[in-house]
Image 1 (cartoon, rainbow, N blue to C red):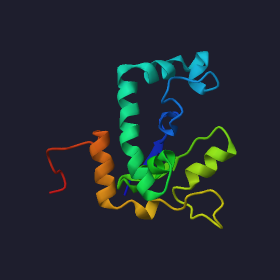
Image 2 (spheres, one colour):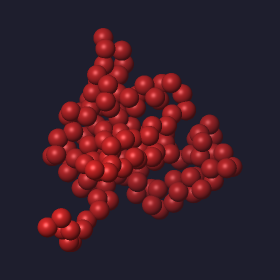
Image 3 (cartoon, rainbow, N blue to C red):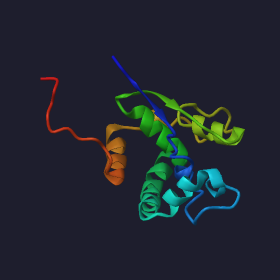
Image 4 (cartoon, rainbow, N blue to C red):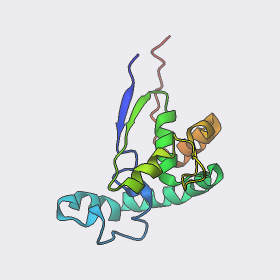
Length: 142
C-alpha cells in the first residue's frame, strides 16, 4: 500500500494557539519572510481557524492533551497517513509534540500518549469541527 507523509501538522504554529490574539512580535509570522503566514493568520479564514481551535480545546482537555498533541494524533489516526513530519523551534516544542505518541515517564510534564485515545468517535468529532474531510461520491474499490 501507499501511505501519505503529512507536513506541518501544526499549520506553521497556528494550532499551537500562539496566534489567538494576533501575531506576537517574537513569532515566526512577524518576520518579513513570513508575511504570507501573517496575512493568513489575520485574514477572515484565519479568524475562522481560531474559532475552530477554541471548539477543539474541550476535546483536548477531555483527552488530557494539548492542541498540538491532538493535531499530531489526529494526523496519525488518519487511515491514509503513515508518517507525520514534526517541526519545532525548540526542544520543548518537540517534547510536547512527541507526547501525542509517547507515554509519559514519571509525570515529567508530558500528558501522555494520546494516540490510543483517538477513537473513531473522537476522530469524527474533530472532523465535524474542522469540516475539511475529503469526500468522494463514488467508491472506486467496488
